[in-house]
Each structure stands twice: as structure tokens, then as C-alpha cells.
Image 1 (cartoon, helix red, strand yellow):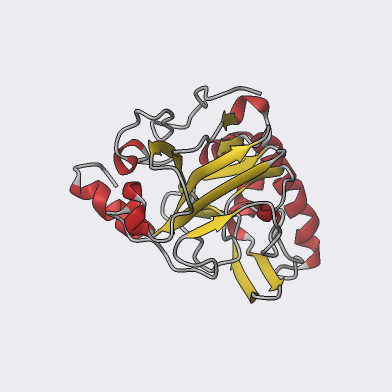
Image 2 (spheres, helix red, strand yellow):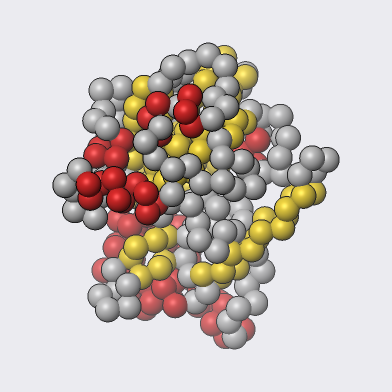
Amino acid sequence: MREAEPLPGRGRGFADGAGAAHPVEAGHPAGSATETAPVGGAVRSRSEFPPVSASVSRETIYGRVWSFTSDFSRGDTAYTKLALDCHTDTSYFQEPCGIQVFHCLRHEGTGGRTLLVDGFHAAEKVLQERPEDFELLARVPIKHEYIENMRDHSNHMIGIGPVLNVYPWNNEVYMIRYNNYDRAVINTVPHDVVQRWYVAHRGLTTELRKPENKLWVKLKPGKVLFIDNWRVLHGRESFTGLRQLCGCYLTRDDVLNTARSLGLQA
């Protein structure tokens, strides 16, 4: 496993280090960027979160700004100490969130590195080597589902769409919806298509999990990570001790609007 090394084919969207440029500029056109922020208690609103103060955070079932640790207070594996395979967030939303922000507040223990994988690069490899698999992943709609029945939270979210979302006029991928934790029963296509879809999905998974396609980043207190959730998959190592993060989702339209206003192509 490598630490903060370049990923092939990822473009200039990945940036790491406290000295990164403004997150909109460093993280465009795709990928991730890091920024520094104050440390201390949990952030309660985006006005206390300088890196996103100029952007619009999206209200979801997790709130506008959320904080979590391994207390399983929500019905989600993120609230554990377990390792998480690479995935995109909110695949069970009909419109998955665009930009994800993680802010490490504290970690008193070991492990817990964050995994980043460029989904567009993996999809491009599938297109080049197995175009029939790419076509299946871009055509077959798949259901993702989140059912939560906790003491303080009750939710049932469903999002339906292909793993690879492409522009119809040029077959270019603009969003990847990949989450093996939230994928529901496949009942959206004829039975004879299901087996072929699984073969295609396994090929994409193999590409995503190749060591050379992984970037590992250690989030430390005061370090903020911006992720393009439509392109970059994330995961984590298992960890020990107390680890507390907060974050939010940014509306994609607002971030792209800011990028264009800065003269960037979007």
C-alpha cells in the first residue's frame, strides 16, 4: 500500500498536503484536495468550517453538517471501526451527493487511513479492455437501498441508476454509483442479464482494487479532505482507539459555479 502517491490517469484533480490551493481550484476538474481547518470540538455549522464557508452544504438525512465516531449511533458501517472497501456515498439517493468533505477532529489510536480510487480511470480501463462489460454497467439500472431503524433515526432511502452514468452523445462517464454495501436485490432487469452484469461488475471491481490504483491518505486533526463523490471512491483501514470526524456534502452545482467563476473549465 502506498501513501499519497500519484494515481495513473487521474488528471490534476488529486492534491494532498496542508499547502493545497483553494479546494475548488485544487479539486477541479475531478478528484480530491486537502485544506487545513481549526481543531477542537465538533463543527456545528458551515460558518464554523472556513473551507466550505463560500459553498452551499446539502441538507440530508444526516443533517447539514455531521459528526461521527465508532459508536454505531446510525445504521451505517461508517459508525464502526471496521475497514471499508472503496465506494461512493449516498448511492441510495436518486441524485447522489456531489462533493464530500471530511474533517478529522481527533484520532487517539492506530490505523484509519483513508483510501481514494479514481473511478473514471477504472471505468476507462474496462471500456478499453471489455467494451461489452462497460455497456452493461452503463445501461443496466441497479437499486441501492438504505434502511435505518434506530432509536432516534428512521429512514428508508432508495436510489436507482446504472453503476456508470454516461453522456448519450459521446459515452463519456460523468458519474459512478458504486457501493457494494448498499446495493439491493437486482430485480430491475431480466434474469438472463443478471449473470452477465455480475461478470461485468466483477471486472470493474478488480480494476478498482488494483494496488496501483489506490491512494492512501492519513487524516490528522485539522486536515480537511474534499472528494468528488461522482468520480472518486473512498474507503478506510480499520482502526483502534477514538477517531472522530465531521463533514458535510456540498451541492455540485454551487461548486461548479464557483469553479467557472474562477475561470476554470467546468
